[in-house]
Every structure is written in C-alpha cells, then in structure tokens.
Amino acid sequence: MNTPKIFVVGAGTMGQGIAQLAAQKGHDVCLYDLHSIALEKAKSQIEKSLEKLVEKGKLTQENQVEILRKLKFVNELHEVAHSDLVIEAIVEDVAIKHKVFIALEALASEDCILATNTSSLSIASIAVALKVPSRFLGIHFFNPATLMPLVEIIPSVLTDPKITVKAKAYIDGLGKDTVVCKDTPGFIVNRVARPFYGEALRIYEEGIADFATIDWAMKTFGGFKMGPFELMDYIGNDVNYTVTETVFEAFYFDPRFKPSFTQKRLKEAGLWGKKTGRGFYSYDPNEEKPKPNTDEKMGMEIFNRILSMLVNEAYDAVFMQVASPKDIDLAMVKGVNYPRGLLEWSVAMGPEKILATLETLFLEYGEDRYRPNPLLRKCVREGLILG
Image (tube, rainbow, N blue to C red; front, side, top):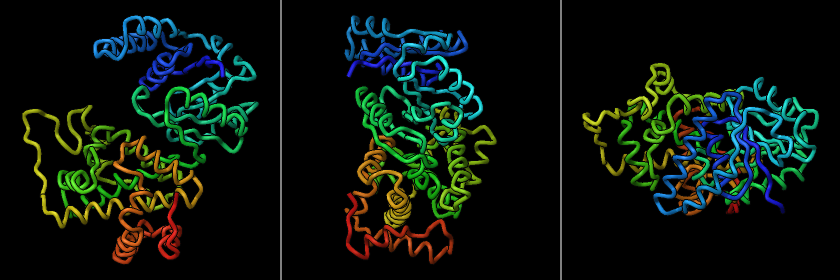
C-alpha cells in the first residue's frame, strides 16, 4: 500500500496531535484551519513537541527536519484535492461538521476517505449530509493522539465495508491499536467507562466514602493508575460531565448512564479540576491533600461495586454487538489504561461473584441502574467464557 496523503481539519489539540503523528510515521500531511492564528499556534506547538523528543533522544535533528518538511499548514480547503484520507477534528456540532464535509466532498477526489474524529456524535448523523456517504466513517483518536495507542474505527450504517477495511489499514499503519465498533453512543470506551465515574459519584453521594477513600480503594484493590475523582479532575469536569450527559440522552435516558448532580454543580461553578486549580480536589500546593480511610473491608466493597458495574457494561456491549469481546477488552486497556480487560477480569474473579454483587445492589435499590445483563446471567448459568 502506498503511503496515503492525510488532510487533517482543525488545528486544535487533537488535530495537532493527529497531524504530528502522521508526519512522524512518514505521511505527507496538510493541517487545515480557517484561522491563521490557530495554524501558527499549532505549528509552534508541534515544533516544541518535536524538540522535546530530540532532547530525550527519541528523534534525531535530521528526523525533526524531515517531519516538519512533511507538514503543511493551510487555510484553504482546496488543498484537500490530492489527499487519500481526511480526518476532521473540529467542534462537536453536527451543523458545522455538515458544512465542512459538504465542502470537502466537493473538492476531494472520489477515492478519498472522509472521516470524523467525533467522540460523542453519531457517525450516521454526520454522513447523511454527503452525496456519497458510503466513503465516510468515524476514526476516533484519544488525547494525546501521539501517545495514546487506541483508535476506534466506527462505520455507520451507510459506510461501504471496503472503506472500513481500508481506513483500518491506514490507521494500523500509524502504529495504533485499532478496534472496530458499532455506531452507538459512546462507541466502546466512552460507553463502557461510564460506571467508573458514575458509580464512584453515587457512592460519594450516599455518604459511604469521600473522594480520597474511593480513589484509594480503586488504586489499592484494582490496580488502577488513577482513581475516578483524580481522573475526572485530570480530564476536566466540564468535559467528563458533558460526555456523561450526552451518552445519557443518546440512550433515551437509561438510568445506567444517569449523570451526577455533584459533578454538574462543579461544572457550573467552574471547578473543572487541574486546569482550573480546583475540582474534586484542590491543586493549591499550599493545601494539604485529604487522607483516605484505609479500612480494607470498606475499600474492597467499593472496588467490587464499581468493578461489577464496569463488567456489566462490558457484557452489555457484547450483548448488543457493539464490538467483539476481544476488541472491548483491548479498548479498555489501551484507551483508558485499565489494568486488564473487563471481560478477562470477570473470568479471573468469577462472573458469579459479579452477578451476585449486582443482584444484591438491584435488590437493595430497586433501580434499573443495577440490573444484571442477560448475557452475564447466561454465562454464569451455562459456564460460558467470552473471548
């Protein structure tokens, strides 16, 4: 396969990362943005990023020069004419994306694949604006695109299967771990990961444990690198809450994805986490960090409850044919750095233990939020192992 020419739309953080990655892998890349100031900032950021790689010995100065030579910063859409793959990474607004892709379709060659990096919008809702929606699909990178190994490939109901195969091959060529998933809300990662945040918030709101204790439990007993509240502060409560709200609405208000008033109030107050200096935690260096309650029994109960909810969501993703069991486990390990795949984890712990935890919660609360997935029940009943 010839090295495809790539056209990236949007010079924000994600667009910069995708463009830099592609150039580092030997592709000729055009990074497009309507605003010259955004392009200048992107060029400066990429140059700084490459300089750091040179300082660390990961690139030579000759490599750096060659990578920058392969990058072209443009503010004219007609530059797309000779591209093989377009990846759009602009604001999450369907109407704006429609305008951009209608213009791109008119200028790109017939063989050019058109893709969106959206993390929250349906692929079909964007594709419908095109005259030939069969060459359109989702290619969802994770931030930072240069470092995060996972990319979700999402064909819509209108995508030609050959385009999916070709697009996957292009992204595999960038050295990424690709997973193919159905065009459903949140795709794999942003769907399956919701209980990591949502159930932690619920435990806090019930007064069972504070932020520091819940984070301690998930790191100590689960081996997670960051606890849910640390991670929400790192991602940003503005971003994390919006994703949860979007998934909740897209699933017709299924209680499994119900957002938290606690996080909503932090978002409304501008307490977004590390980037604002305060979220669930304060990031003032002069303030003492809160100490967790290290009661092992309580910590294990917190871990089992959150993990059971995560596993249940992974089973549901298989049950609803969002992706294969293998791709679901790979996505959670490579996309959000989970210590192990959730389906693999359920086998190691014993799916009957997960089911028992969920049944206890369902009996206690009487909420559909805790209903065990039918596939989980079947696996326990028949001794099946997903894989």
